[in-house]
Amino acid sequence: MISLLHRTILTAFFSIALATTASSAPKSAQAQFEAELARGMAKGMPGISAAIATRQGVIWTGTVGYADIATHSKTNEAYLYGIGSITKTFVACVVQELADEGRLNLDQTAADILGVDQLADIPNANQATVRQLLSHTSGVPTWEFDADWIRRGRGSDLLTERYWRKDETLNYIRGGRHAATNEPGKGYAYSNSNYTILGLVVEKITGHDVLEELHHRLLDPSGLTEIKMEGFEAIDPLRIPGRYHFNTKEFQRDAGLHSSFQSVTPQLIDVSRSNLSTEWTAGGLMASARHLAEFARALRDGQIVSQAAMDRMMTFTPTDEAGEQAGQGLFRERLENGSLIGYDGGVLGFGGVMGWLEGEDLVVVILTNVGTMHSGDTAFYPLQLVRKASFITAARRLALELSPHRKPARPTVSP
Image (cartoon, rainbow, N blue to C red; front, side):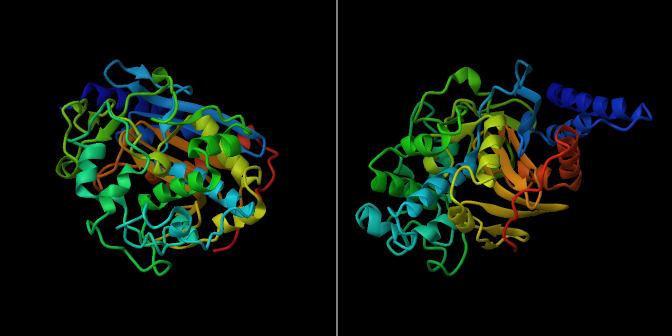
């Protein structure tokens, strides 16, 4: 039996299609792009906030769907969404600036900076360099897939009123719980632990809270007031939409259902009682689509870090996924009709993509209030939407219509 939400989503989706095929006139660029967003809703995303930017700045923002499924409250551009691992790009920018300033050598080990005691019993942590932590070639195992952490951080054993300490997640990879994934620098394995350690490195070198460095170096100079770290600074709760997660058999098995996780559709559970403090520098930032797109544009255009730092961030090598390459805080992702440079992220209750088309003046951001982590292959994640040729074609058309005289983007490094 189809739920009210799904009826509403399908009605909205097909009404767009009917409205645009009833006339012989071609679909408008905005309607075409919104129809692509509606495809995400049809796959189970409750709400989507999107932004497109060029060298002229953010030229379009829009939303579809719901901030709150129960009340059918629609989403709008003022909401802040968890951006998950896109947080890592911000942290990498700070690390790269410290390297430019001579305060940090990328070939130092984390132990050189933090001391061996703070990293005790963490595989590879005493040997991995800062450069290897940035590029996920350190071999340090990730706390994100520890069975106990999954239940305590995102599942049945979650303490909803609790805020995690910054380095608490590292306890889940200490003492032989997990082996190193590879010899430092000799392989690739994505690990949240890398960026938890890098957060500690930033604080040790600067003597300041990493959040203070993020604001001082990146956010405040660019006027990005709609990017904040949950659990570590005040966020108006009215600016945060309802959080939902794909309730698959895999999620039930690995994370388990907390007593507050109420079913709202056959696909989704409400996880709004959670917070992102456990993610910290690995994935704890929240943002509006507009300000995240403005950050990506400014980063691409050389307004955030130096050219030397950007070259390091965009020194790409293949990962273990076809069509994907990792740099030092950025990824290159092969799409059906282009390549995206940026990052995607997923946490409990949220997911998103931030990036720019390689060799083109087009920045795209989409954020959604549904998470896919630990939910298996049937959960629809944002990058699946962005990869489609029809999505990028619609984004290009909308950008061309709104910014017809845009110049080519700065050339990027070749594969």
